[in-house]
Image (cartoon, rainbow, N blue to C red):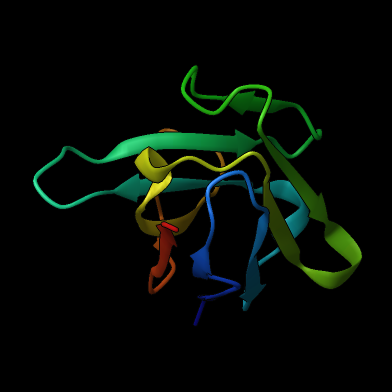
Length: 118
């Protein structure tokens, strides 16, 4: 059974940094795409970033230049480094994983709350 376990959420002041982790078990992590969506109250779910099995990273325009996604296949873990955070980054962040052929989300993490506030 595949599981994605997220960690690293919390409260951060505007301009601060936070790192989310997404640890996978029960799957061949290295062949999967991994990413994060986020959803704020009253807003639609937004794709934040994803990284392919080849390590190619993609970002939403709203986080480009501030967030960095990476993966460590030896640890079956992906990371989302959030720098220069803004109040509008406040949301529940959901890690996800897509197995080949990468058309649909196959697995979801439990979600972690990120709050950017002074």
